Length: 573
Image (cartoon, rainbow, N blue to C red; front, side):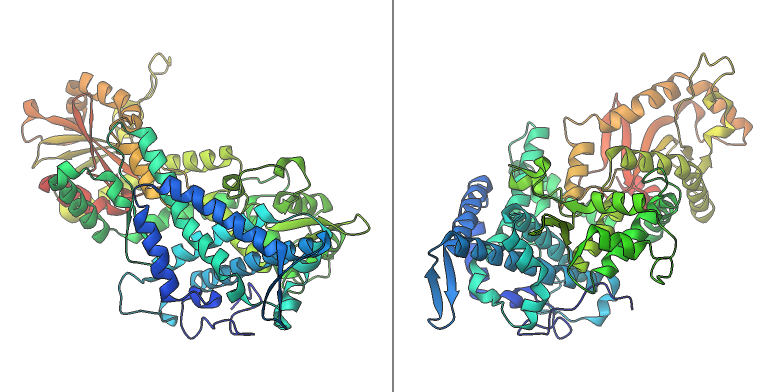
């Protein structure tokens, strides 16, 4: 198996993840600590913004304590620092502690991402809430908070350079005792979920005129927030139960192969899309991976060192020869230089946007030469998440979605044809086979965008089918965001896509039926055909998947639930 980091756990008192997975043990956070944390969460369940402000204040207060005090091993307690130099060193040390916590958490995430879930056992493994995906998601969210705050607190000075570049050496010498800093590390875990609750609630409130609802606190340390409650209104409990049942059924019938088609298409696009004039994205990702391997050997390099290593034609680690410009461009793209004006005076929220974009920490040494400090697991996380979430210029993400939409046009009809042959209750037609959907030669009529036409004889319904792709976003509550964007009462998402196609089909229905009959379609009752719409998207939304567009029903389904949706849901509902 490829080495992605130098394993910390299992050494010098750190808990070994190969025995049992429980990242709280690294920091000696025990069940009593977690019970206290949940008591706070429950107390402020409907007032998380106040708690968020309190947590930010408390985190800063604890940081200031660790700046102004150092741990004295002889006296076995923290004692006051007297000089500015001592305070600078103490601050650098506590920043390195937070970075070390992020390293431990990220190493577990990488292990789970690159290994089989069956290879590991869990604390409380009998509890179904402690599942593999919940654990990974919890690790990722916590890693982001730890890293963002460490970057926020870090000073770009000699003290931070000295300690951060020698972290592995200090680990081997048993310098770190995470238990001494347990309080601030626990506060940061708490802040992870408080921030998510606040962000989602604000987004929902901005998009809705209904009474504000907040995520509910659950007794699950891996997933303390139940987001789906934001879609429920107390006076409509029956509707809430219907929604939950529909969403649950769709998730049960999800077919992963449909999602895999989309993933494979994106992998293909990275082979041709340009990151720069001379680098396609695949080359860029490979270059990041090579840089990661360099940092397995040590935690710091000068830019010249990195460039000379990568330009060495005899290096077996380099699959192709990169130019110095390509190397420097890639490094610059990954570099976090807090001395630069771009990173001055930013609020903590803004550092969350830098976590996966800027894993190389930039410093100037005593000779004013640039030194880059990094940890291989951080670089791996950056590479992995940039691929997964398209963390580049927004135009790239939009282009990928447009390419998916264009290419999936053919794939969608092929999959619907398979469903037609298998269940024999649908008739599927490619709009390209109907002349009415083609633009005229003189271009006086634009082509109407329709991905498929489906007729269900048992319902006597003609479905106008479209496909659209949500861009990937690194948001813990992404499914909820997409649900709000698509199906909230003030959303025009579906209407914007369907208004023109539906108006056209209703206006030209007589001609469309005539052309369909030429393709040997037999209507159950030609005069009473009902027109409806289906929008296939790349997620299972957390709502009743039906929207009224100018008096016409439009259903919203995940591509991955296409079979269940076309053969069960529409009939039941």
